Length: 236
Image 1 (cartoon, rainbow, N blue to C red):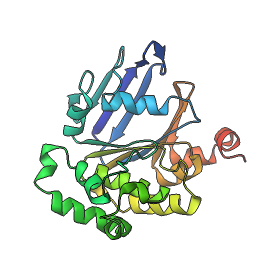
Image 2 (image 1 turned 135 degrees about the vertical axis):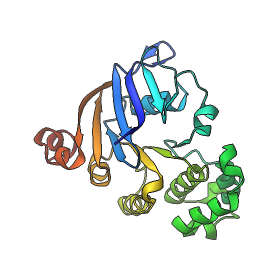
Image 3 (image 1 turned 90 degrees about the vertical axis):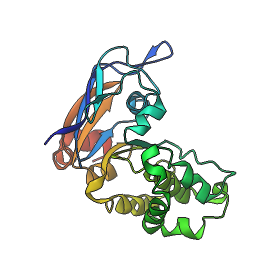
């Protein structure tokens, strides 16, 4: 299967601090892949390097045949990559509908805004019910749905999700994962997550990131059964 995203031996810095060492990852079209690790493992820095918020000091990142190194975040978005950021980061004083419309930034998405809006509301009906409310009045789970919906408004090929379960009740987290599983074959998913059990259940393959280095990778089902993973991350 052809690679959609290829990350090869990157080592980005945040200010003068090196967060990641020699990181590589391959993601095929229509795959669901998780990057797992504890807090401060470097997961968010990894996504920042892909989206252009951090520039690797060395290494290469290619998406759909295009090099991403040196591209600015809006250029990366225009190529078909959307980020659901850690902590949701919705525009709290704007309405739910206005937040979603902000996601239709890429030129390719602007002409199909109404269709995209209907699709997002079909996935998350509560957003349609709340569309005229300020986003800041939504619950944490509803704000996470809004952040995902906003990203989907850009009609991305690759959806990056940073810490989906952070601060959410388990039932809400499971509900959102079920919705993501309904996205179908049009969107490839790269999920960065501390909730190892949930992420392994959802993904097809996974990488383990520890102290800025990729230490393990494999099929999610295999990693779920690995004794070291179960002991270190699942408390079993």
